[in-house]
Image 1: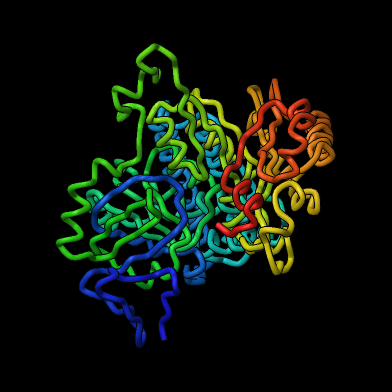
Image 2: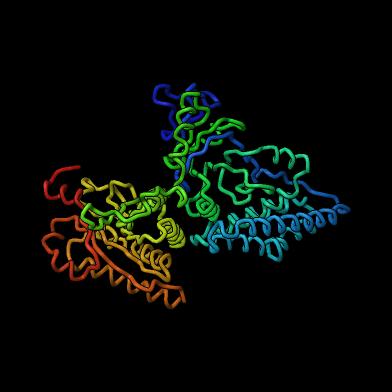
Length: 496
């Protein structure tokens, strides 16, 4: 029986069912949910990218055809290099230079690399076809890199897979390429994010992207955010539920994909489409460009509290003075294992970029055992609200704290790092966090990593003990934030 998971539902008035070997398709359309990479709303036909390296057949050629396969490789590499160079030029000024440099890495793979040497060796020694040789080499690299903990090496495997896909795409026949070009504008549906599939060779024809797998911090995800392509990843049951040409409503701001909705739902989304699109500086309301003042001329600073990139972009578009608190739990909730330092740093950079000139204060991970982070708590406590949370939870798992501090330091290089410590009860806890911060700065300096010019450390007052000791805490803090909900909960001994 095909199970679509609890995260897939139909329109409330028309419940979905999944029976037999196929997905049931209710009249109101299926509703699938995923993780937001880049916000926005798009409507259009689904275009599936079903090709996977693992499915390339193992074909061998005769000895007389080995030279032909090597020539095919050289021609395919020439085409792929030209595509990457053209794409690099096309994206000039549209994405951050740091993000665009991943294409320089792709070019290195395509010019002179172990990848090319290994493909040539398989053609010469095992007489594999070019397609089979590329699939074997990438599969071998992929298996090796999946065994290591380094996020950088894992990303290298993804980059290499993208390069291999690009070379194989260049081998496609002219007739198939013509068919591809016939697809005008579409919502890309695939197993995982790929830079290759995001950009059409001739023009950018991708309205939005939705994938069954993928990470929020991959290079392809970074491109999607930079190019403001509405994107969802981690959509369970996607490839089973969506067929080529299906009508899709991708509401990436809400993390929702609607498959073949009825005319009523389509009309509703078409009417509100402009309002739900990802905010841009051009779409900023005129009134948001000016300071907020009372009638007697006193300026009022309106600050935002956010927990993801779409919220940061919305605050920036509305002209808020600062992001007073950015909740950092999102990336820790996506995977079973804690995110790497590099993954965290990339996300924090994206937050700072989305905020523009508005300063951002990052709150350190604040999670009780009710969130189910096994790597932080192990088992759920009988009463999570009175258990390990905030700074106490971080100091109990100091490696997680140090990883997050390093990521924040790296992401804020050259600027000001503003962070706040949640759940502080006394100065001892705050001092220990500062000691960890100082030690991680020393480690990064030894590694010749760029550092922030200034670091500000504040606290969140959300326990009765922090209020009683607020004078002492204030002397050791750069800023104080009041957590009214938590304070109310503890002072009244009442659940929320």
